[in-house]
Image 1 (cartoon, rainbow, N blue to C red):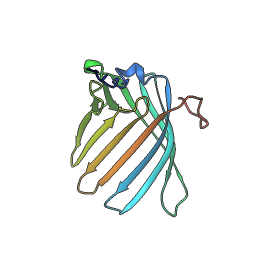
Image 2: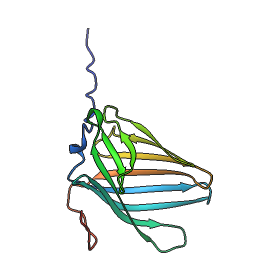
Image 3: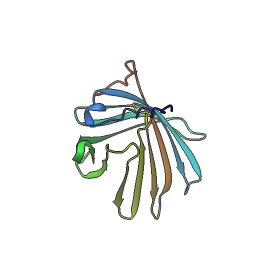
Length: 159
């Protein structure tokens, strides 16, 4: 009788420290169902000193690329997870790192935000946002690929 060996479990992020101090290349597709258009983003992010900071370019059809950046506060949360806050310190959502595919919800009346993370290919990961409201309806898929070299930085980056 032969015994089959179970496939090893993938290494998953366990806490904020697994993200901290690293750079990721980001590719993002935003499908705006109200405007019937797709917008692409290409850039990078770094999680350092309790901040998630990304910068890159938004590319819209028939328009020159637009510079884009955003920051969120990332803090250790319950059970080793991550609590995400807006830059003004309002709570946004919790990333549950006890799962390989955690989900979260944020209600910002009248808009509703749902996210599904996927860490199954860690250290590469994805975030899929579905947003709905009276004036918003879009899907946003972001793919993060961990960098193994130093990225090119924009002048003024605080990284």
